Length: 111
Ligand SMILES: [Zn+2]
Ligand SMILES: [Zn+2]
Image 1: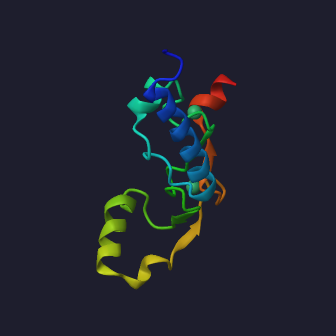
Image 2 (image 1 turned 90 degrees about the horizontal axis):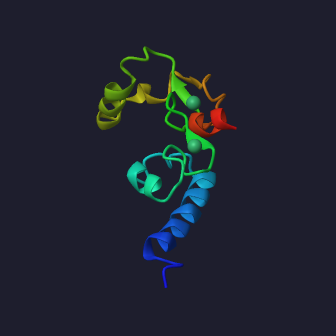
C-alpha cells in the first residue's frame, strides 16, 4: 500500500519536531534541510509553522548594537576568545521585537 510511505512518516516526525523545537528554541531554522521540506510539500522556509527565526538576532531576541556588518564573523571570534564584551552591548532586537521569531515571509504574504 502506498498510503503511508517512509517519507510521509518522516514528514510527521519532522513536523512534530519542528513544532516542538520552535516552541522550545527558535533556532529551528536550518534544522531541516529546505529540500526535504519541499519534498514533503511544506513551506521551505518555516515548514508550515508560519514562524521563522529572526535573521537579525538569530532567534536570540537580542542584537548587538555595534555594526551590523561585522556581526557574523566577529561574533564567532569573540566567542572563541571568550571576550567579556560579549553581552555588554546587546540591545533588544528591533526586527522581531525581542521575540526571536518572525512571521514567515513566504506564508504570511500568501495569506
Ligand atoms: Zn530579532
Ligand atoms: Zn512559511
